Image (tube, rainbow, N blue to C red):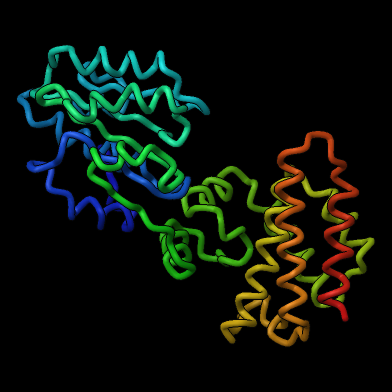
Amino acid sequence: MIGIEEYPWINNIYKDIDISNLPHASIIEGSKGLGKFLLAKKIANDILSNSSNKSSETLILNNSHPDLFINSDNTKILINEIRQLIDFSNLSSAVSNAKVIILQNCENMNLESQNAILKTLEEPPENTFIIMTSSKRKSLNQTIYSRCNKILIKDLDQNQVTDWVKSQGIEDFNFYDYPSYLAPMDILENIENGRANDYLDLTNILLDFSLNKLSSNNTLKKIIDIDLPPVDKINLIIDFYTNLLKFKESKNLYSGKFINLNNLDFSKILLSDVIDELNSLRDMFNKVSGLNETHTLKFIIFKLNTIIKQ
């Protein structure tokens, strides 16, 4: 069964969709890991199940429905795949009353692919529905948006993420142990795959460092030893201190093991400047191959040391 009831943020959006009056082209936008593809398949199931064929849902679950086209989930959507999509749209339906095309990761379409799909969006064959997903808002040709019904899945706030993860049986979950850019499904996947400890270890190291329980050298050594890609470490460090800055500016209070962070005295302006500098460094690290992880992390830790440990 294509169930979305356990994902309330998706289910609430789905309840507002009138399948009987659904436009022929829709685009679902939202951050990675929020369930765009799950929502797309649920909509496809509703469309294709309007027939006497009782096996539609099983076929859809297995991605083997003859009236459903799903592009491969890759980093590029090239013109050849769009041509396959167009050829499929011109076929007669096989077992259902309609055909559905799900085009994942549309942010990866190049200009040629976007131009190629426009005519199908403007003049779709009868009883053919196109559902596009994108993890980057406003990343496509504006004409594409003008031809599509737009469905936005908003990012979840701290309480929504916490409530949902705990509803999945993870009672000891703490939102601030994980990067805020991780979607709830990604957090749960990391927990279930045993990768959560890497994030927890890094968060605990940063907490001890900030509370002056670890020297800069020991902090650096411990972070290097963690089994995470360098860019993940950099992302989490920036995220940790961005949250710290936000808390100071909003006068909110940490709780639990983070409670002593409320007593930190530092310059918000200086920390903000350092975070901007670290964001630029992260961009450089992503673009320039061969940058030394140790040297990069050493620069980050010693830069933060001058602000947090005044």
